[in-house]
Length: 535
Image (cartoon, rainbow, N blue to C red; front, top):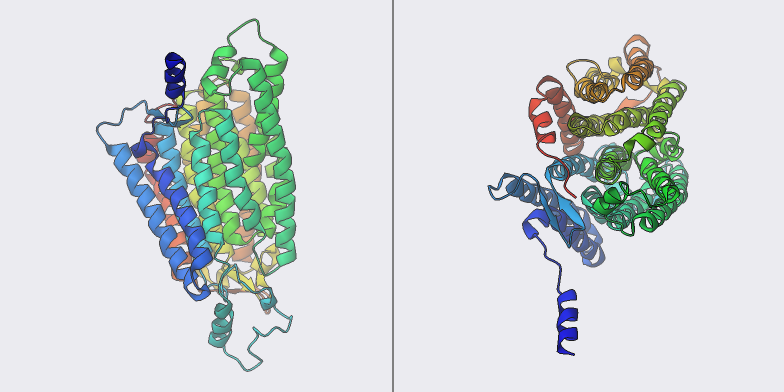
């Protein structure tokens, strides 16, 4: 009896936790819970300031904790397993966490801004819609200052801040998950807040709510695919740990049907979250309908989290069986690049155009991910950082071009924009050239290192297809540039709002990093290639 009790006491012992390694994650999730309490108990007038201060301090504290851990002499290069091996904090995870925190800062600044439009993008009262004759409208003789004052009186829907922190925390867990069950839980933690955030716009709110419903329904299907794949892989390997699945793929007496079916279903869920074609159907509608700051957050941070998870799964569980599935993902990458490049040419809305651009970039990223070599790992992570900052700044610019109904996203309304605001047009031109992959931008370096890794892995045909797709995609970026500089602005065309401090910082940060990574990429590349995944 004593022996039986002692054995069970040993089983019930709490898992060992390296608090230094997971401090950034705990800070973000703890602050998310505190943010909910602020939302519940603070008076409405005090919530915005308190939430903004809390979120900015959280990101700063999490970043400081990450820097301290990464620079500590006692930190082994190979990383650490914690929470009973369910989380792995290694060099790639440190890079991805740092990228997520920096991109999260840019997105939060866009979310918090209330100067670009009265009350911000998340106005608490739906009746502020133009033309609906609400009590918010101050009357025909009112000044713009009075309009802003009355709109600000209703304030923002500040619940967007705890939702952002929970989504960011879920992303951090997702890229560090060392087993598929933890990864699924993290997938839901990052996805559910995003579904809600997509529907929080109060201008063009029906479009926003439609985007949220589409994202939720398609996301639910993708989660079901992911979970069913986990179940089949558990049946194949007898475990959900990535290392155990990798060991099981070398055995000869196991069912290949379970392996291939489980891998296929699992990858469908991951590719959906990464906006990889042909699993991209949600992307254009959700990008267009969501509040632009939320679109920026999804386009940058979700892409980093999704591909971080894809890299960990491919390198950790399926690298030894790559010859069996590599051809399938070749085809997926080609389809994604073709869909993004070709359908992007037909778009007349700026946000939808950037959405299809993200589908094409997802194909380029997948080329690096399936290279399965050290250069492919570091190149893909560098590409994620470069693309994220460029996208944050691009959506910040989109939020500035406005007409009486809100944001002017139709391409015809951007005609002659350089004559109205040369600075905004110049910055947007630079960002579009970065997305196209021209030299002296981070986009060029990102594509170069990813394609070089693919060539090293003997995937030259795939690289040639990627180069052609990249050239085709460059056309719709150049079309916008020509429209801004070589067309006459309409007399009743949109105006360019003066950005507030938060939006200015976000755009400046994104554009500056895009330039620095294009001219001096060695530091980021060395950081991205500092180590490998542990399992």
